Length: 526
Image 1 (cartoon, rainbow, N blue to C red):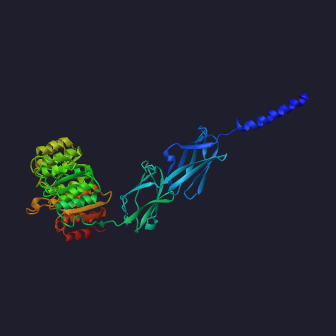
Image 2: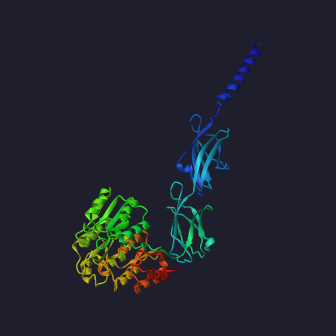
Image 3: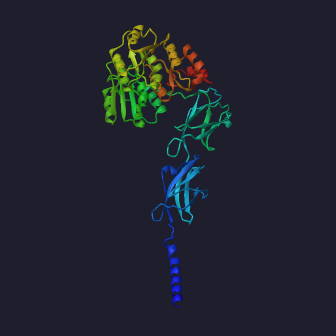
């Protein structure tokens, strides 16, 4: 009887243990939460293979260590299954490639059926395209560069990209982006249309095939004068600008060297009468959202009343004004800073200064002025500040004498680019500086830039304005007479038109006639 009682007690204890243990010692914790390691784990880029890294937690806030599965659902509820790897709370889903941008849900499920759901953002990659596909262009130096960025704006590095030009008769190319996310190529399309840029089989961008040359719409055809033209040019090149440059509209003496400053500051040049601020110009300053105005010239060029009016409007005014045009050019050079090359033009050679302006601006080189036989002290002082290695004289010995070269030769390397007239000098400039590695736009403006060119009338400021726009758009300016094309310029255009993408006349028909515009278009068309 005693043995029987002991057996019953023993069995009762076993029953109690069997009931308690599953609820205590053998109880498993539930999957409760998920945490991504970085933002790149939940912000994906279409077409780019990604590893999603995350941590899992149980309902006690401890790392979850069980096995899990995962499903990525799109907005339509269609899911793609994955088997995460990992342990000790740290997990990874490898080789995740999503084809369509949008909002997704990642559902992670434990073996016990516990689930956590977290949103995933998928965005198309960003792409910047530099260059154009030109019909029948077989020049291998004409390159197109693409730059890829992910959903975070970071470069997509070492990524295979396909350029599909089959629809434009150019076949396909396979590229690999570099460390900066860039890849360059050349292609010769034989038909108009679009070449597609594909990432993992998905079109992420297109490149249209364009004509080798297009004629731009004339800027300033309505003939509202230099002030009105300056507004039109500003509208063409600048949607906004914190800085503008203001100069007089009747002579270019003070502003001859202003284009490199325009380039450095990314500021349009506006023109007004000396005594009162043109209302259109004031409106444009306000539309651009400018907070600072650089005035070029003294009070006789832009009156103190204009300065006071601008200042009272809340604008910061910086006036660059010297004792003369040489000093003003020197002050402008000081704003530009040191440079390896300085271009030096005759102080009354506005045409030569305009011919070199856009090129000098692109190089970050200032323009300084000289007299015919002696170098002004202001210019010599500026040279010490700028400290160039080379000085290039613009113009023949008839306007800058050999004495100038002798004065400079002891301290600088000196070159001279000068022809028989202003147009021949311009041709030499163009031949020396035209970049034949890539095509670029050209702007045509009036060569009547000095008072002596217009028989006592008001010279045209068109070339100054066009040069600022050209520098902004990686182009250059050619100054021409009103009605006829000089043989030197005709020769240059005939043999270099393949490097021109677009030609735009700047100014009214009183500056460049419609007949000359048509002649230019016919000559350059290709």
